Length: 228
Length: 302
Image 1 (cartoon, each protein chain N blue to C red):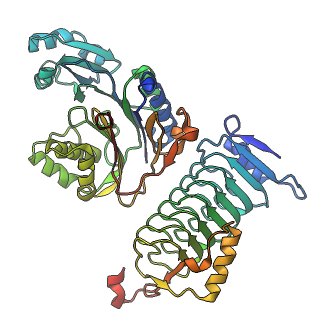
Image 2: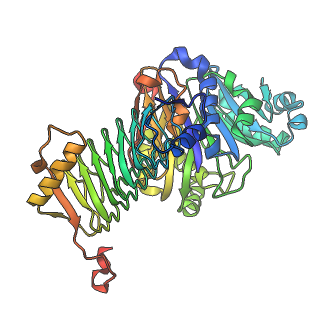
């Protein structure tokens, strides 16, 4: 198992190694120790590697991940798994603002709380947060699923497109054009699948409420000007 | 972008290491603000004395004979301790205003950094590592301190534009962000009798809090009022003689991480700034909530 110690090796050493995996290589489990809040740890992965980061990271950890499995055994700074394409990113602690922003695919699991703007402009990523999420989460979210076992802050799903939001706790307020919707069997099935993938065993899909777009603000209509 | 660090000690056995810990935190935040750096240290004060920290562009001439000139002007014992471009002038507590006037009379080019029983502020343009080295911050001791690395957005890169700003006795503020209603607020505060040394938006925030506290609010209440009256982006860390406060605006774009143990409360713009603190592995680490006042006070805790 290749191990990188960021107290003695550079971030570039780690990320270049992750970017130059030879075909047929099977030693794909990386370990990173002493991240000490470093930025851009394990960004741009495009191979099915696994990376265990032993500690807390700074900005943009696992950004643009395409097929890797990155686990942060600590907390993550702003922009964790930003623009993920595919793969899995797990944060054992808390995540700062805009976790999973603009993500196009893959699964982001945050076992603690996520701060503001979680899943902002998400475009296909699935995000499961065991704790709470902050304000302006799923702002302009286009597709994918955001599952929150705890509470959501102000202005959830403001200017939402077709992402599906599921919150088990309370929602402080809904953003413009975001409304509560019926939890139908297909949503329960999807929730069950996502909870299972995220390792959540003690929570039932029926405990969630679903939120989605009222679809009034997709295109500018003068009659809806007050809703912006 | 700017970097903020702050450390409020609960365990007095760490007081000897305050400057060392803060310096290390500050230098880590260099890439958030390489323009200038500054630090406010709440150190020991002598009973019945007040300290005025002054800065000079020409310390080699300004500080020569300053002690004698001030004693002649004030008719009272004065001590002057020089650190590079700054000097701490210590006088009897009742003479703070007179000393301010005396300094303006005998050395009109000196700039006032801070006035108070325990506060000293050191700030200059340049890389944080150079700024802390020239003032010997690592060797400083005290109960709490706040540091700032600046990437200027709203006003010039000058010593006076660097943070912390002090607009009241033993008070200071550092700011990451930009205020949009600072001009209007400055006009109102000038009418209310506050003085300003710069056109900087952060100085307005400092003066606002000072004005609120002059009206009788404590630090926590003053910060609470700021949520309604200040418009713009901000993460503030503020200090008073015994207190330490944190406030983020309701949008909370500007980063903030806090850590608390039995020994201290620490603030960093990024977690990186906190990684060398003793016991950080077991600290409670969290991101302060938007529009929520956090403050700690030695006197209230005691």
